[in-house]
Image 1 (cartoon, rainbow, N blue to C red):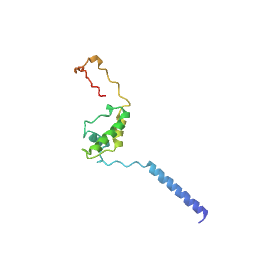
Image 2 (spheres, rainbow, N blue to C red):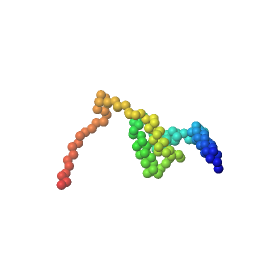
Image 3 (cartoon, rainbow, N blue to C red):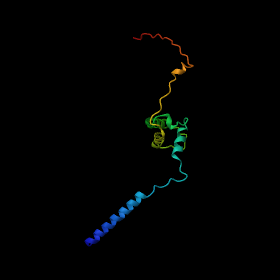
Length: 131
């Protein structure tokens, strides 16, 4: 095969590869089907199947990943899944960490309110010497 023909074929292959690559980069990601379940709704349903749904602002952002993993471990241990769709651990963790505040505001002091309604009585205990 003549050298010019080989160079032309290689150049054409390179151009086609570049055009195809650009097409893949610019192509929009496939749309989720209209009937696909909302990931946020799945997380909400899953979490509230065992307890009241905790809003993301109940813990600081850094705490949620470990808390979500603990909750998933409990579901695995109990083998009691009340929801038909189990969200991915990463999706559930992402739901909370993306919405949680960086830190929680400081709690207000209750010292001014007085001792409270609970009355305590100190009862001394005598321990035997067990030596």
